[in-house]
Length: 337
Image 1: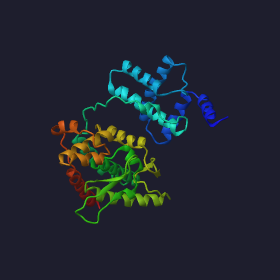
Image 2: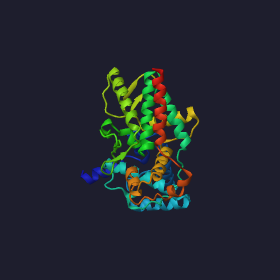
Image 3: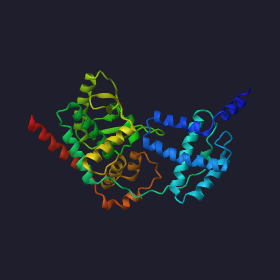
Image 4: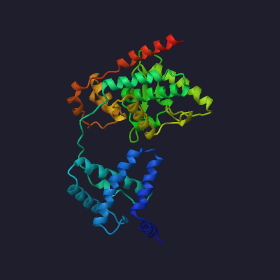
């Protein structure tokens, strides 16, 4: 049997449902959230339904660009929303990327067809009052007499500062290490965080100065906790249960659950996404250049910030209040000593 025959035999030996099962297992191993998995399943189910209706079963061993174009025409008639069509094509593209990685296809046929243009929704940032409420709550918890409660609150302060202060995404937070944090020796200089995007060179983003004392306090307590638990890791964040730190790093789902907990406890509307959008408004208010903002967000130079500028008067943000509130809580802490 030739190499080509062997490959064709391999393609004929599986169907789409089995491949999708492997695909979802791979996504879970990469730490993708349940919400992400749910969205991919919904989008690929649309492809499955198309095949059942228009093809002979769910085999995809002979799939080529022409078949994908036919699926694109099917989406045009089924969905009026460009974003809905675009999302389903993107999900299929990522799925076929997975098949290419498994060497089941030589190239991705979906990448040869264009997606519908993306129409951006109006930005919905977390409100200033809700960010302030979350900040005060976490500072209060950071003074808890329960060591793990205090440390977890300080970890969550880190997350809030890295998103609202530096515009980091959840995917950035899952891989960030202590080596990625730069604390300057010069009091006038700003702290910075090193970001590692998947498809471009690393770059740094500035952080509010209040990050420095909170970071130092957090790292000191974290190192003590790691010694007690006999753990060694360089991830900045950590995963813990009600009793102890389990390991270094925090999954996307773990980060989402942190914000779910804040929303439930404090009756506020705040997510990682809305906090990141608040950061964009903050930078625009600080008169940061568009090119700098797009670089710090990991966006292409062609990305348009017009929607944010159009709503800038409605959303006024800064980061000076973070330090003022921090100083107040430190005084409260010292008064107890």
